[in-house]
Amino acid sequence: MTRFAYVNGRYQPHADAMIHIEDRGFQFADAIYEVWSVRAGELMDADGHFARLERSLRELRISNPKTEAGYRLVIAELLRRNRVRDGLVYLQISRGRARRDHAFPSGPVRPTVVMTTKRLDHAAAQRRADAGVAVISLPDQRWARRDIKTVNLLPNVLAKQTAHEAGAAEAWLVDEGGQVTEGASTNAWIVTADGVLVTRQTDHDILHGITRARIMQRAQALGYTIEERAFTVAEAQSAREAFMTSATSFVTPIIRIDDRPVGNGAPGSVATALRAAYLELI
Image (cartoon, rainbow, N blue to C red; front, side):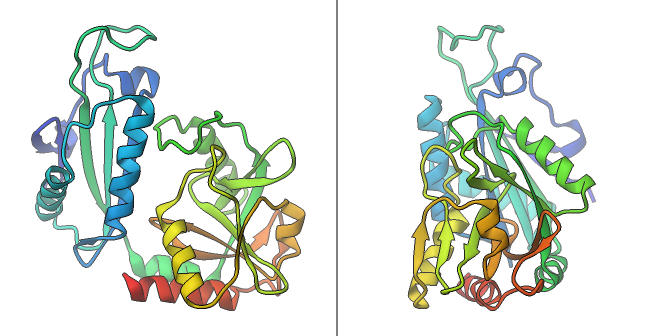
């Protein structure tokens, strides 16, 4: 079956889809992206992702080339063409094609819009959540505006590769003060001995995760107390539970941090309950 991508108004065979060599997303990472999980053909947490898309474009001063309705039409058609019922949608918008110069182009430039889809095996993800995963800690070497969802992800890529080589599923990034910021592609959580959920506050140091926000809503509805604050690796290793959240991992329990077990070394009841509550809501 031919796989399709969407590039600047056209549906193209995935293998033939291209952008110009002087696209600023390619040359400067002057671009933002957004990812939606798809379950049974429906976008998960769609409104939150569209709102973050608007914010990211606004922070980089890139004009939004489409309305939300326009994006939804393209997404629906791309899912149909690729026969994706369970998977993800990836959208990337760059400032566009212009003669190479660090400063913004002086004249009007049409933003580049690229969209792809991919199938995901939700059953495999559930098996991983049932078993729990390991993470390692690494210094956070990213730029100072991590709250903008840009494609400037090289430090994240290197951290994720280091985790992969260590046999871990994720890297938790640690700032100069010894506090965990977030994972290379996830938000970080712990559960204290008293059952309090802790996740870092939303400032410029972390991406404002849409799944993170939804999990906070569900947790509060279920009666959990939440503290938005930083925590150290040592506190996480001594916690009752740890877990990570993202649009593709949902809620995934963490059972080891830097080769030290968390709690009893098995997925905790809080993370397991929150994952079930989130999937039930969706």
